[in-house]
Image (cartoon, rainbow, N blue to C red; front, side, top):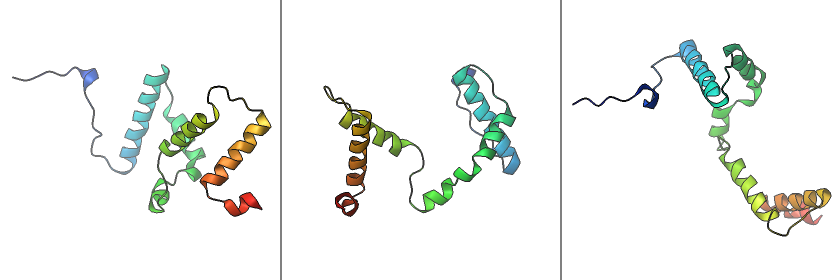
Length: 118
């Protein structure tokens, strides 16, 4: 017996493509994902322009070789830790005071004790 899976429930695997064809397929997938999330289409040229504009920031392979994190998980985790520490019930900070507290927290996390005490 063959089980039929509706088209919208199928997981589409990328075709075996190389070079320009793979890049083109990936850009189309990004455009489709954007349209699904925002309800409006985005042109391939806008996506391409974004990557051209930010190409100096996209060195994931080099960062990975150096042991750096890839993705936003570590940043999101740190933001959560800051919120847990500084947004507890009953805590209120002035903008300058909050800035000083964040600076101290970062110095302690980075173990920059010499800088902290000098």
